[in-house]
Amino acid sequence: MSIGLRNSLVDDAQMCYLPPVLVEINLKFIQRTIEYSLAVIKEHSVSPIIVVFGIHPTKPSVANDLVQSDPIPYAKEYPCKPWAKSFYILDPITINSHVYEQPLKPLVAVEHFLYKQKRTLLGMDSKERADETIQLLYTVAKQIFQNDITLEERTIDVLLNVCEQTQKQFYKIKEALEIENLEELKKRTREYAEDGYMYLETCKTKYRRISLPEPPALPEEAKKDGPSRSECNGDFLPASNLSKTKSLDFTFIESFKSNQKKMNWNACINPGRAKGFFKSYKDSNSLKASFFENKNKQ
Image (cartoon, rainbow, N blue to C red; front, side, top):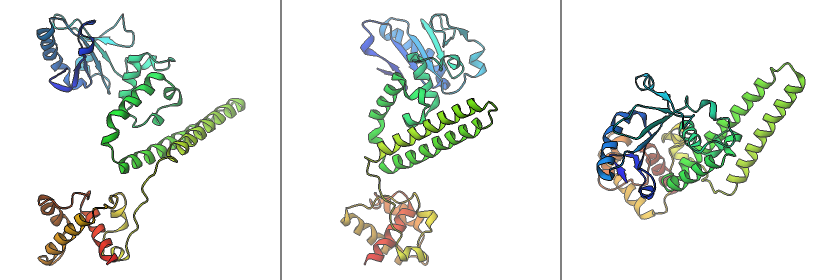
């Protein structure tokens, strides 16, 4: 059951066994938790237990009132009587000394997952990737968001993530070369190199099974007076198989061009979209490139 914002969640499935648990993800809404708590008390006649996961360290205006929690050593408590039973806050600082434990405590794993904000499990360190709770969180996130992410966005994210992780691994190797102890130097360098090798091997195995779109060829006419290469890179969308729709799109463009001394693609795309055209184009650059490509084929 949601109360107020979608970031606030009361788990009805646990109502018959435990008091309602209100999870507030964003620390900016801490002040609103009082309102949420009162709503829970009014609805269920039970004081809630509040758990806050912060993706940034708690601001001093709140942190100054926190005390170390006895039952949860990786959290701090905020004064909450009489509007809540308990108010726990986890942030990067409160869990700092607990992120090296194996396995991670479930709540520590949740906080670490939210704090790191890595798009994929491969973005986490090797020990973190092996943690069962971290793996579960990424599985749940994938199930929730996989239909909302386009193939192009996934491709870009994957490439950027692989580059970032590979770059970090090279940096670790570079730092290891500064170690004076020769045996330790060899050990560290070998470990980092093997970890990097396994990471790239995992990427190859995973993405070899996925069909990624080839970058579209730039037509000759577009090279002459169409968009530049830099404009085309990343702005193309896969060609639509709805030729009839494209034909109507291009008819609108021709009509628009006939009334212009100089073609303004930004001025063309907005009124076109208002009339139901250009639904398959990301922006004016992709529309322009597709138009020239079509002209070149004629």
